[in-house]
Length: 509
Image 1 (cartoon, rainbow, N blue to C red):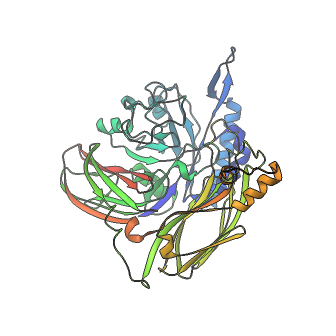
Image 2 (cartoon, rainbow, N blue to C red):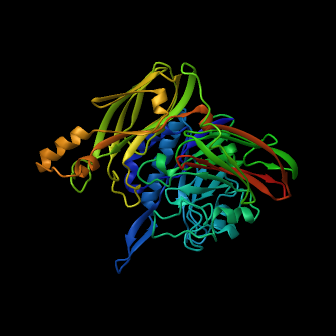
Image 3 (cartoon, helix red, strand yellow):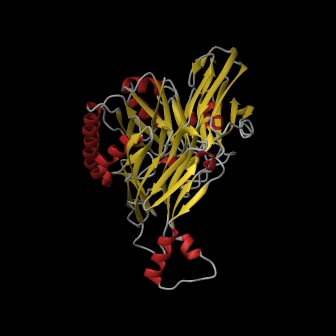
């Protein structure tokens, strides 16, 4: 099946509708398809001045909804799969859900309860996907009592909010302090314990730009990239999510893919993974309990190759950091120009982009050019904008001999390293001279016994350590026993901390 990537949680607000074209353009650069989730809420003040979040005026919502419909239909005609949807919150008792439709003819509805929302769309090809599920019961956390697995076939368990899988693991939900902390009462694992067939995925909860790389994304396993095929895949829970970098994951039980329901009994579980960095370990979970930890670290580091033997590696390049706004208030945005050239073969490029203003072009077998824009703060100042974003980048996969020299040009600098050197360590490549000149131009003589002022305010390029294909590829299989109602799923960890959550395969009840 095709692995199609998206951000299922991009919320565009009423005051951003003039930027809808820019949102769609960016989504098309980053994503294989895009379900836009219109956000029909605004902040209002009570008579006493308290800040309250409530629905926008009906006339505004209806006008915005028609703009979303027109844009979706236009993009669909152009051949890009785009779904229209909106965020529903109700009275907060059942948790927040994004509602999406297969066609472009539906109305937005805003009943107070989840069961009423389901009833409104009875007979309609609609799904309602719960997100940040692990918040407090009755206060925007998921109410698993009212859940319907047909209407909500999977749940978002990671986003910019943090991780809702459980309340015992890392990646706590601390960004939106006013909504947290998280609790285990409403987490994703509670839904599985109730016996629901509910898949899992990650997406951004992005309110200023779609497809923020650092906020997570979702992969769908579909027969092709038509809306009908994508919808069928989502309906059948063939989805998984990543916290940051993309991973190609195949997970089957006797050939049945993630999300499937299989007979109870003896089966063969298999998985194959291709990641963006070295795989550390894979946790095989049965009924939310660790069944086996398959450790990949230590299996590839000591394997050597001849000096002239071809090798395939991956490495990340990141651009950003730079002048602190406290000292340089007018230097919040930087434009970068660069290129990568190799004597061997450029196999693939992953876009690690977090904001507007990025461009990749002139991609050939031997290199590419790019234009990047980095920001030291939220570009829109939106009240639900992203965390401060200070870097953009790529993950490059290249093939060649160990002694082949790869050249990276960044602005007025050129850095050349052999593949063997890239595999030794990571490096920071600063624009140090420019920082010194800037300091002298603005502040005069700032000489000190430490170079903090120069180093801290320098733009930097980080060249991550390259890893060979044996590090970022992994396959495994084992025999398992599935009792009626049980389920198996995967949690994947990379060496750099990136994580993937894979929807379960369920045994018939």
